Amino acid sequence: MASPLITVIIPTYNRATKVLTAIKSVKNQSYGNVQLIVVDDGSTDNTGDLLSHIDGLTYIYKPNGGQASARNAGLQLANGDFIASLDSDDYWERDFLEKAMNALNRYHADFAFANWNQKTQYTTDWRDFLSSDPYLVPYIKEPIDGWYRLSSEELRALYLKACPSPSSSVVMRRQSMVGGWDNHMNIGDDWGLYLDMIFAKPCAAVFTLERLWYKDIDGQNIYDGRSWHEVVQLLLVKDTETIMKRYRTVLSVNEMEILRRRYIKGLMELAKHKLIREKRATESWTLVKTALGEKPVYAIAQVPKLAYTAFNNHFIQRFVNLFNIL
Image (cartoon, rainbow, N blue to C red; front, top):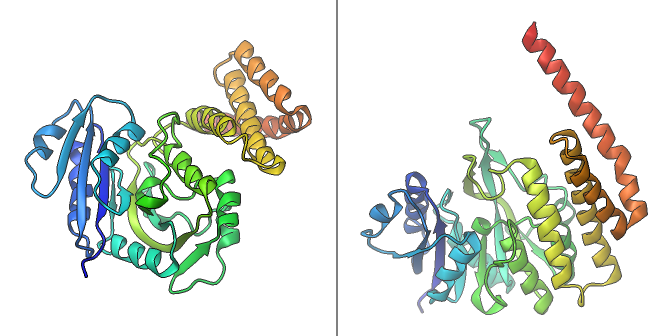
């Protein structure tokens, strides 16, 4: 009996120097039944020249619309019963798909995700990313053959607080997907996709701490390539606001409270940045007023924490400046 078909979608934008590594890692998979679709999201470099003549993949060019629209364009042509999306600056170990499929079938899970090696712009060392993730640690209990199972209730609790499974780490059952990647999200398009699955019906997932893929940070990544205040504005504020509005009718009071606190923390952190870094007092006060309108007591409680962080950062910067002078 033939193995089920996995469709792998690689969205790319101006990464001609890296996308070939991602493609090679898919073609070298020990799991053989793979449909590979590469979606060029309006690249202006020589990506098209490199990819349009490569055998063994479907190449699509579309106007630039962001990572979610690129993945969804690939999904429209997907024939597989299982779906995976690999970012064009990432690459998989040879047995990534095989191990994910074995776990999906053994545990009858809707999706599986794996730990990864991550490199930053400031170091050449690869580091383990998931093993110390504060949100995931409570669910790291007794593994079975290296995999941990997350029940529907656990998934709901975990994914309202964080998204520990970026797109490159996941293999999903097509029939478990409610729709595609969320075009309305700025950074968390994969977060929205998983929440759709989790809230639509009982859902189970499995994960492993074995590092089965690589993320290389180059300053252009959707999340890791942005400055911290951009991540706060786009992910913690705007994307969280989108999630709160979308699932308002299905969230319990406690679940909505989790998202509201995340949202308020983002507003107050952004207000601090606007005031201290950009000297924009009016914009800062507008953000504070929005936070106060959501939950006054919790918003006020963030002020000492933010002031303490701001003071420490200022002190450290003064020390660095003094050291440079000397």
